[in-house]
Length: 258
Image 1 (tube, one colour):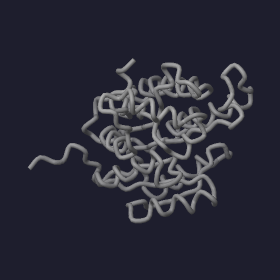
Image 2 (cartoon, one colour):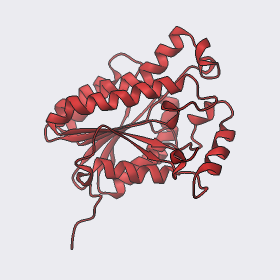
Image 3 (cartoon, helix red, strand yellow):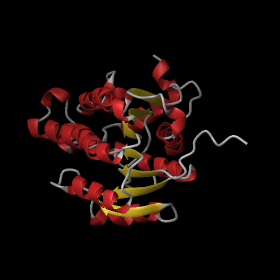
Image 4 (cartoon, one colour):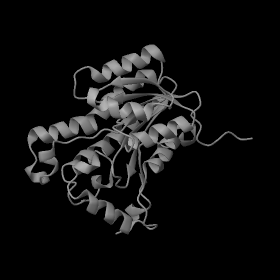
């Protein structure tokens, strides 16, 4: 019998961005586990830990570590711990985004220098830092994944500041894929349709965005965290061995509609 297409048996990964049971990262972590992988997960702070622990309980999460990517040395500590425990890393999911509320709810033209810089650092540059730290642990190759959104390539009402930030993230995916390709490290972005997560709830008029997505999608269904997880597990697996530098939509076909 042929092995399953999505097989992560023996693989170890890092999942950044679980906030609660509704997070995109949660759907991905469950899919990684179902495909046979073990993983390390992170939480933002002590308050967040109480929401992340119930998600990882029962999953093959061998390490649950604090990590605020804005805190000096926090990412390095996570990767040092992984290096000591496993000595390698096969895949990584970065599902972190943030912008100050005042800037997120303002027009892009009115965004503050500090707010724009913070959004770019947390949502984009932290992924680049993850790639740099993961590279020496992916000696046999690996997969780096991040999470984007269609607002990177077209104007989505009320998405504003995060549009240029996600555009930068997607461009970074292409450049990282080119730089890390010789080492057998693939870099891709997941681009889900809108999902009712805690992070997304900060976007102004988000309910209207959900309704519009369901109206436009050919099957008129919203995407789920399980849908995103299935794509993430595939892209992390050897079955996607020749897919890199790509932004992959998982939005029920919404992106093909006017």
